[in-house]
Image 1 (cartoon, rainbow, N blue to C red):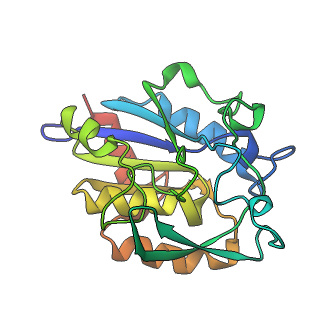
Image 2: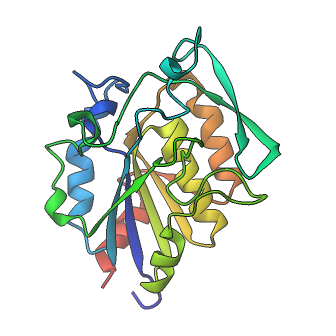
Length: 227
């Protein structure tokens, strides 16, 4: 179809986010792999997998904050270049540490069909859910170059899948839409850390201009016509 150049963005489909052994396992996270592999077989212009790739002293790890508990506590993160810009972020168990087995893409993923693996969360000072950039703007601390890479390939639309729906996948979809791409989060190809909060997350995603779609819907069927 003329003018339709889709990309697949597989977010953080890593061992530490999947049962049975992941340190931050998302319930039923492994169940999405067969559907993601089916999408990988479709004619995307480019297929990108992202990985959390944290140093051991990463600010999101509760163990790096005395007296703080994962899942329960928050931390205030300040822009290292502008202390007046801050945000609150949830603390997590240690996960996806650089070079560890938990940081690897899940073994069942057909990674040989992935064109590019993008590592994110490499700066210990900031939390970076989005594969595009950190939340700071004055100034931005880290830009992965993903938006530029997509534009270099003349991508028009981005299909987002992976883990976790209510954190990195949500932020990937919101930022893809912000960057001007037609954006589709394929709902059956993601799972949430907090499933009860997913309806609210969906509203937030759709308010950004991205769409939450079904793997059986017309947005995915359209991929069959891509060249």
